[in-house]
Image (cartoon, rainbow, N blue to C red; front, top):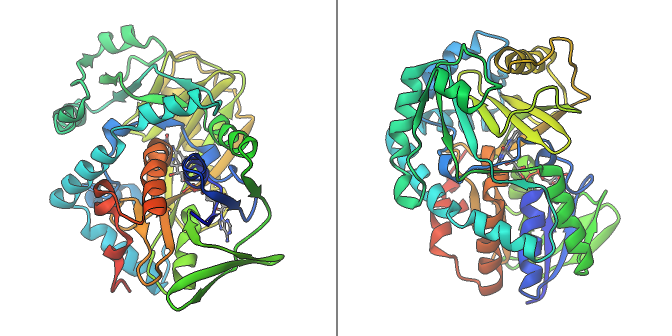
Length: 417
Ligand SMILES: Cc1cc2nc3c(=O)[nH]c(=O)nc-3n(C[C@H](O)[C@H](O)[C@H](O)COP(=O)(O)OP(=O)(O)OC[C@H]3O[C@@H](n4cnc5c(N)ncnc54)[C@H](O)[C@@H]3O)c2cc1C
């Protein structure tokens, strides 16, 4: 195996670099800014392979129409007359159907099956990070939605997840006393885990550097040189770097690299926010999802993070204060004892890489024999990083696409506008 250049040092690029290194590859990671500081640091840290349905889901069109009228809602789509974005949006709406959702859920659940096992292995290999096995509690105001989601959970029980028991009213508060009595019910998925995402990326960086892998920050890849259908080098403003294989793992920036090699990789940014309170103003015993508000609540060793919103507004670090305030308000409303005057020490913004069908984009890039892509993980980048890294390392080192990756092939975008 020759030299693999990994473009992008988020959780996907770093974890794949780790698995490649384990297989003896010579790996270089290039990041435009600082590796580990994009979406991969600011997320809720859930490792939730049991609840891995794609974002475009049946009913989403109706719900999002309602949300669009409310500036504090969990979804915002910035009107843009960009043909690429309009085409992406059209495909996204088209994917909001039962058949596509079921197929995506099945493929992602199968892909995610070994996540925990691999993350445990990483820790034994010396990748140090904060991880909790306290599960994930889904809490609802709307009991009808809760029962529908619990019913739908049966689809993943064949993959080794126990059907959760419903907790109604007082039973929910008894289980998690920090939750407000105004929540009608919930259920606990005990297999799900939580990591502190900054520690995960920092742990991977430290382990990679210890293993002799260079991670070059401030090195934006501005071109991929292709000759006779093969990538021969990548260029940054400061260097030309020869490569035997190029892996594009540039998160929400991935579409740009598709254009460099003449392929369609239609990935948009789905912006979200993370609010850090340190020390934790309230201490839930586990991670909680406020379903109706779409707010993630994550207790870490040193504080509490609230995360949420999905803004399809292109790549920008701009923060919309009303949306951030809505996340904070939701946390304070549904967590008993959360002081109204508690303020976050830090508010983060991160771009989820979103393909129009909501599925990851994993595999060889059509038209170039030695360029692969691992992106489009949307809300599941942390959840699927471990399994993505193992399967992509297998693909890159053997040249054969593992069956489990086939539903995620980038070739599905051929002919995309
Ligand atoms: C608020 C929020 C909450 C979330 N919660 C969860 C959760 O609980 N669980 C979960 O599984 N997922 C969650 N996600 C999703 C998850 O964070 C992402 O799917 C994941 O971080 C994507 O990782 P990545 O490595 O693909 O991208 P990124 O982390 O964005 O990394 C891409 C990297 O590419 C680099 N790059 C860009 N352009 C170039 C270039 N030209 N040259 C070189 N490098 C370049 C960037 O600098 C960046 O470091 C959440 C996301 C958000 C925003």
